[in-house]
Length: 344
Image 1 (cartoon, rainbow, N blue to C red):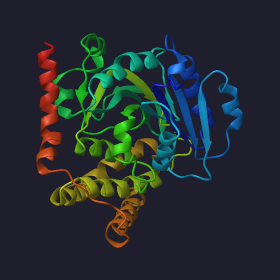
Image 2 (cartoon, rainbow, N blue to C red):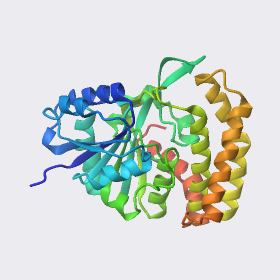
Image 3 (cartoon, rainbow, N blue to C red):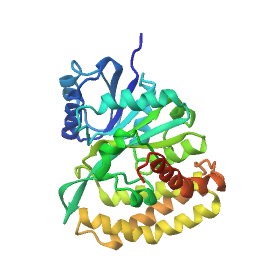
């Protein structure tokens, strides 16, 4: 009999030390019945069988070794196909559960909420991201980066986490990242999972937008916090800009009305390129703008090739009404939630 309620799906690629830290943090979780969850590890890199053996007697682990690097999207799809849980918690291999009661709270609070409301497709968690200065990590910062700007400006979330938890506050999100997100497996399968044209980066934004298009809600839990170390090891930041640009254009083409696709694509290649460069310089001070922009252009060329020449991208755009709700309605909903609880 299958008692597994939750499957933790982790795709890894040659970050053995990070994965070991993540598994240690899962092992240290308290007041949670281990028969209720499993860990599905999908390996896109060198074999880590020795590491798996170290933990497989202590944790319920399913290990899948791919033949080469199949990418984050395909790796996660493989993980979900081989999972037994009704709900999926996507984690990156450099995540870390620094609080010992995260899984307890996810199972007792968030999964209970999902059981009550079958139109909730996903719940994203707050994140501790590293702070960089001159290429060095100098600390961590609490963030709910995907939350709309209006809500963040209206309420001091970082200094009121306890209050948000006491009032069981959940916010609406228009998109999420997969370094700590709980997804309803049924909804994931209904929308055919991650788009495997997107090797890595922006595939999570695409998934969350498609959940909204298919009438599922996407929420943020701001009082469960998962650390994302964003380990520099094995990260090629120029290659990241190439992948991000390609996949951002694919995501926009698939999901947005045509005039918005054109508007956001132009914005990405102009204003966003400058913002990306400023962020990149904090991690790699020696990179030039020209080096980075070449990757933007390569990504654009590859995206247009997939869309217009190879025709591998299926388009199912949201209505303009839905876009207005996601862009302007969600902030209003979040302000309303805070006001109803007397927090504004």
